[in-house]
Image (cartoon, each protein chain N blue to C red):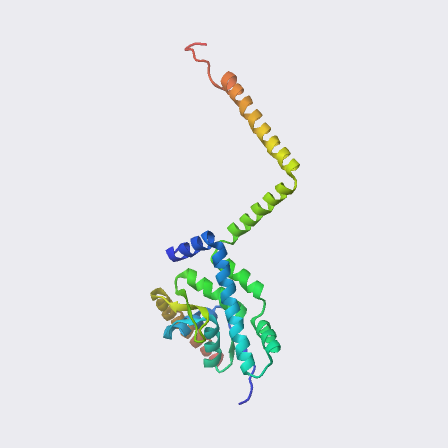
Length: 111
Length: 130
């Protein structure tokens, strides 16, 4: 497979991706960053240094909740879970993203 | 402000040490997992650990940003300043005593003088037709 360069995440999209990743269940920080990288087929590189501040911010917003659990390898880890209001926020942000992407797409085609 | 946010802020204030400790644990866990992944990719132990730290970026900076997310940064800074000042006082007790005595004397003198001034000048004399 041809190696294309990795893209930095756009400002504000990390929150959306975190929320979406947690939709299927609770994950710890490392798993979130791995999941995003894997699913985007290594195109999106999560800046690990900004992942945790984002997680803590989202928790303060009440969109995710953290609890300590035991990881796959039997180590203590902090897992994050989507809350009800987080689900709503995810819907909203997904919709906004789709509108933004569609609008930019239209301009690129027609302008 | 959401109550969840308030709750987390309170927690960060009351069990400050524990919250810090949890942050350490959380980031250490991340770097350990990354190290493990690097080892699985064929690096030797030292290189794997080094690369994991590089991949993470500035750990201290990340911690600082997490603290900012807690929203009690200014209180933590204030407490740090107070602790720093108290340490300074302990190192130079003579200076601390002088400062306390000066402020006490200043306050006392001010209060006394105002009381006298108030009694003789500001209050109207308590007769109907002075």
